[in-house]
Amino acid sequence: MKMNKVLAAMAASVIAASAFCAMSVTSFAVEKDVKYTDSGNSAGTSDDGKLLRANILNQWASPAVSDIPTEDTENPYTSYIKVTFEVSGIGSDSKVKAEGAETDKDLEAFLCGGVGPYSRHMGEYESNKIPSDEIVKITGDGEYTVEWKFDEPSSTAQILYVQTNIPIFEYGGDLTATTAKLKIKSVKTDDGVEAPSTTATTEAATTTSTTSATTTTTTSGTGKATTTASTKGEASAKTGDAGVAVAVAAFGLAVATAFAVRKKD
Image (cartoon, rainbow, N blue to C red; front, side, top):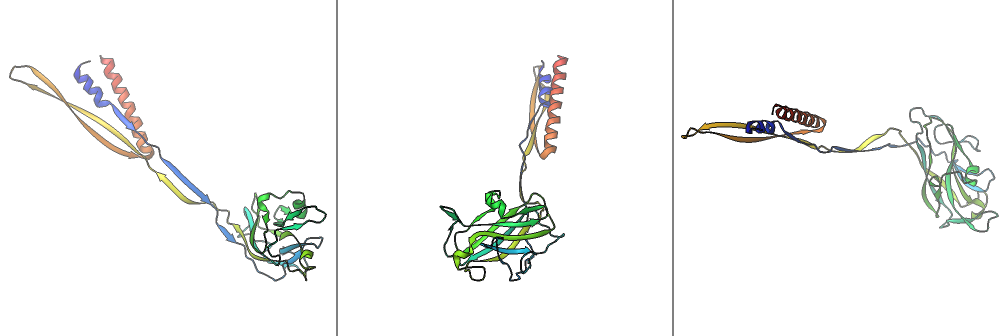
């Protein structure tokens, strides 16, 4: 291959380097308050009258309790209901002797009721059908938060209450005499809208280097012709998909040109 053909092939060659572009997006739903109005009538017990409960929405209680809306089409319950409540009057107790049991049982609380198509009552707790992450351990007087998770949103609630296994008769007597108390602090859900919180983008540069060649022919005093070559490098930066496309196209052009030069040989 003659020198000028070699130089022509070099002029057509392209080196393209493309870097990886990475994007990281974290999404979250915004927690919101469910309108809660404390009627002062939340104190209640399980159906057998033995275990402490706090009613939030219960039209079958006496007196009836409607401390949250029964229907809210603008702000429906979405992926969960979360209730923060305060326990008082049990001191530092964290366990209780369950009726008929040989060992002490952890004091616990969980949400029950009916929300949209979902329902949950004491029977699910007694048969261990409530997920463990939706049951909170009570370790004495203090503030706790318990959650009930849903697969689908609902704009209606029929009944909702915090149920515990705190035996009221272990703390002074019936509902009017017991020192064990529950007080609802807040009711929350999420807005159901996934919104980006952080977006980290690393834009990688695609660099295309082009080597162009020029030839110069000079005649010396001896009458012999001397051919010299000079090269000049040019670099351009492209980012993202456009840069990759340019690099691929240039590479294809280089291969086609080299093949044509070789074929002429």
